[in-house]
Length: 491
Picture (cartoon, rainbow, N blue to C red):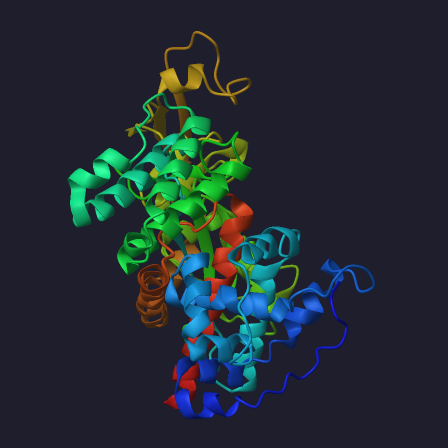
């Protein structure tokens, strides 16, 4: 049951916070800038107000998730640190003498209270509201791009992931006395069965934790917590061998990744105003309409949208013109690619989309073309055609083969007619000084991508599934935005 009235908790030790936590501490500034009551209002309907025992405040649990992002820690390490770190207790709203939560509470909070919600849009809209209130957003320029996040298991089976983390834990323990510990550890398994791997990991953890002097060493405790979190995750999803929502995406023609994409729209002041989380194979340009709509929903005006060539498709150029609603018109600062912007086919027809990083088309199943060639017309006056060739062996076993691949065919191609006169207006615009000046600011979102990956661990997913990725994206971008607002206010 959720207490409808959050009562003020008084403590005779509250003065410790003023003595220990300096005024310029990031967590004190964070608390002063953000009124977290909106979390209570948003999640109130997810709790019962009349039955059951009093639940832990959703504001406290949400703040724990914020700390998890800011300090890139496992649930167990986060809770352990909050026992003695007064800045953590102050931030989440506990009294100095209060006990901390059980780490499993955070898992339940994510899966039971945050599912079926729209946390990503909620947090970004709130951060933009705070930015507008503090007068730090002044431009009408929006920069768009997508960043890649590798799946937690990265194409490895659950068995492989568990055994690799178990191996890392053993190697750390061996630093004490390898010969003695080798005789104590359970026998390793190699049968590839997830059930046996879980049993092995449980025995390994029990063996090490039976020796408190070893288990309590910080380096070993960290590995124990990581392995235990992975074991608990797999115990709940025994049937899953990898992230069910992750897909293979392409960075270039020669490199790919297994995971998700976060498509972002950022203001010129480096505040992320909107984001869409998808699986890794999705095209960047297809997400632009949704991003623009979400940006406008925050109350921001959109005058210029700056992106790379992935956003210069036919549909996006039409969106920028907005002939049916002139008030929604904007300048699309994205260089034309002759293949996708001048094609005679509609962009995305039959599910084929263009990947600008690899300069290749991708089929509906996520398979990338293996080569391309230009076909010159035999008759004069006819247009050139760019033909993309796909791997026939993949097509033979593809679930989308019906209607796309003819059985027995020796090749599978997708062609685009290259024209030269459909987008003259955009061609003229990209030659102007205004276009070049605006395009030069696109580096800002590249820097933002690097920031969230390096500082907040956004290069690898913390959880499996699209919901977990959306929760990670929501909290990560919210933290990045609030810290950016604090920096802009101080300037």
